Length: 353
Length: 171
Ligand SMILES: [Zn+2]
Ligand SMILES: [Zn+2]
Image 1: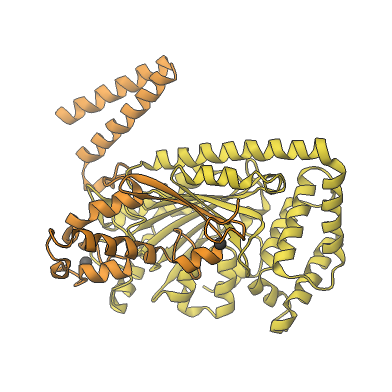
Image 2: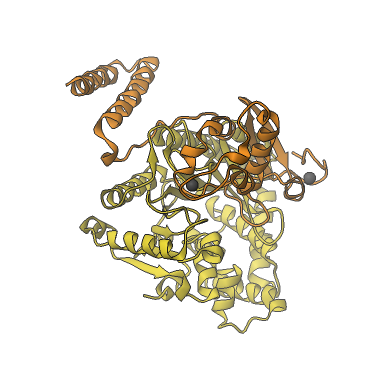
């Protein structure tokens, strides 16, 4: 089974649908880390051990309970070229760590790409569920159900006191990392963002901007996730994150309303200028593209631009990354020409509107 | 908000660290964060949580090394990782490392998580009793929560569930 079916289309099946609060929450992700008791963690494991881990975990896929998730495709990382690995990373189906550093790494991906199970990353098993919009609970329920299936077949490293034992001390206990990607342009424009983000970081959550090639947060996208995995139950972690995200959604909505009421003309001007630049530029770097796409997304959400869907913008977010860009033009992109091809691709997509 | 280190670039990384139960906040630009070797879980590239942990662990070694057993002698007998290797790498070699380094892990977990004991999911095959006890603890928390919110009907139901589980355990 090759990875081609997952890299030939930029949009995962799930990205074609929208979830709750999809004007502000792009996606919800839950990842749980597990290890097999009888093998050393991947850091120290021999290749022989890692092969056995892969085999043991792959066998579990035969459990009939997996059928509700559609077909699951096991892919060995060693069978992939660099470009396809990069594209799987850009779609968040595998981590950069699995792509670059794993030995005997593999990933099991469901047909709709909402479930991806990484093998021999930092831990033996990492179950990831990625849903559109604000669907943290749904993502957690699916991840834990998949965990239950694995648990019936293999012995996980578990300790009464410490919980699930992980390679890194920051994941011990629940092994759970839940994160929500949010688009917060109005909070950035009204300069409230830092106050809110610093409040969030005081209660055991981590916020980070989504970085591109530069060092600044790109496209007003922020990822909020739990920092603590030990001492809180899974339900507490999810509820805590959920309630914080709900509050941020409330602030962003209020800020958008105020922008429209108090500076409609200026916001419209900004949004339309960005739309104009994206539709006509001959060259655009990734940072500017992300910022302009953020403006246009805000314009769509506020009803200032018509005929453009959030899905089209999601697609552009993925397509304008280096791996997909390179692939779109059949590898004819020279390193210095990225900005030109990026501009061309965006023009073509927006030109259809 | 500007970066608290250089005061020039906008702070783009926000996180808190728990040290001996005290939380400190950090607001840094990425350049300064990288320079300081500060890290955030889940970041990629130049950042690594392991460097941060390594800092914490080494700090502890200096502080407590005199009275505690010399950490050089600490070694996981299953995978062979020594405590000093662990403190450099910030990662365990195998699940038994948790047992061999156990005495030194509480301070680390307190710093990273503010807590040392797992209260979440328990695998079915590990045993029904622990699982049921956890369930009871969880229900008790929810019971308190319903009482706080004056949701007495829900509270009554939770109380019955707790009684039923406690009966199962005592049998
Ligand atoms: Zn700085
Ligand atoms: Zn060990």
